[in-house]
Image (cartoon, rainbow, N blue to C red; front, side):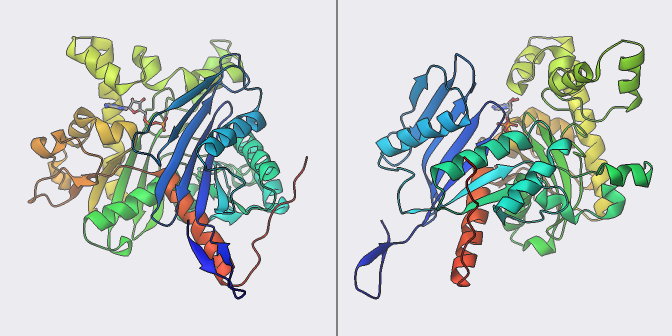
Amino acid sequence: MTTTPTKEGSAAVQARRVLVLNSGSSSVKYQLLDMNNRSRLAIGLVERIGEETSRLLHTPLTGGDAETRERTGRIPDHAAALKEAAEELAADGLGLDSPELAAIGHRVVHGGLRFTRPTVITDEVLTEIERLVPVAPLHNPANITGIRTAQALRPDLPQVAVFDTAFHTTMPEHAARYAIDVETADAHRIRRYGFHGTSHAYVSRKAAELLGRTPEEVNVIVLHLGNGASASAVAAGRCVETSMGLTPLEGLVMGTRSGDIDPAVTFHLKRVAGMSTDEIDVLLNKKSGLLGLCGDNDMREIRRRIDDGDERAALAFDIYVHRLKKYIGAYSAVLGRVDAVVFTAGVGENSAPVREAAIAGLEELGLVVDAGLNAVRSGEPRLISPNYARVAVAVVPTDEELEIADQTFALVGQAESAGQEVPVGEVDN
Ligand code: ADP
């Protein structure tokens, strides 16, 4: 425990822990970090909230062996989920009532145009996040529930929102606007916002570090390939283009999302196939992408099937890679000069075949992958291009939770060191 002597000579606890919460519609992921050395004290996940088969997985990381504890049985709502997580943390001596907890950082998916940086959550900020629900109906309500639950648990503590969209707010108008009627677009706040911004920010910065340069000195293309997937073009540390749009549906082929399609496909499905708007929404968000193409959305399984000679899996892989190539080419043109193409997230960090296939044939763009380096498995940022390549190709593991903790802690620390009181939102019980 870090302590600082007070004027009276007693020891006051210096709060240097941050709890990071990522609240989904039926899940909550959490991590408790010690900002003295930016290490994790515990990580956990509550899933299937509201179902009979809810499950909490909690892993304390303070001891030698990281042993995961499991609780099963119905967890009715987010408040109960957070309460149970708090009990698990308390059992490890990491209770959320500890004076060492400095703040709670929340991942908030949609911050619209207003939130360009991490923001301390006041009532007014929460109202604004609520106002964005129509453009993020799947995500923001869950984030709001998480915030309210955490506020009720520690009403005295600063809560910080870190927005998925924030990093992309630097996109120029010509990249952010759709070519549709301006009045209609503005009336309904229809534009390209982009998502996964916390990851794109972190990874593009780390890539610059890997190249031994400052973020301002480099132009990079980041390919965040998880279950959701997005690309971004980052020029001198600022995002100038990204593949997701009004919602996370646009862009790359994903695990279960289609990515780019002709928007008229939706009219066709409605008029000709007789599907409802909700059915089309589910089709394109949950039953498309790799899953829709071949019945599997896990790249490991798809590669196994390809090795067994499965043609549907092979075609799904080719469609996935073809889209990636199109974006690499497009973003090379947008940036003019590219210093690095960077792979991250579950597929990007782990699938050598995806990286190899996405870069194959792009020698004219200065892009080459070294087969030996590409085959190396490592949790560290690394180059996979040969020394002679004009453009670096890299793998940089993403760490959105660490980025949220860093941004949260920096914001709370800044406010405190500037002698300002950190505003705390009122609790709405
Ligand atoms: P998200 O955070 O979007 O849920 P992740 O970034 O954790 O997703 O990525 C999950 C995906 O990563 C899985 O669906 C799987 O396709 C892929 N993946 C994970 N490990 C591997 C691996 N060893 N090889 C290939 N793909 C992998």
